[in-house]
Image 1 (cartoon, rainbow, N blue to C red):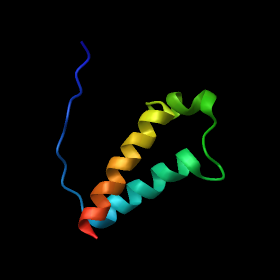
Image 2: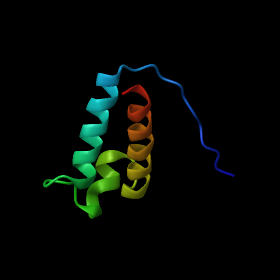
Image 3: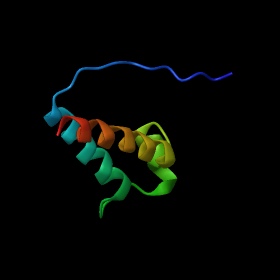
Image 4: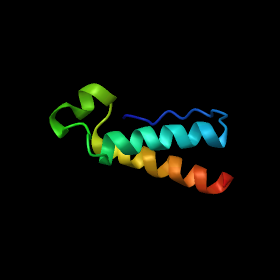
Length: 64
């Protein structure tokens, strides 16, 4: 069984915004990382990266 490990980190809204923007660029930007090398370069597949991006966006919405 592969359990998800969770970690709590304190960040400012600016920290979250920077991470949101960077992850959005690698997932969706004009120079987005190609699918064949995405997991190697980022450490997780694009689907999981987009899920992470969604959680970051939700956290940003809470602090705005």
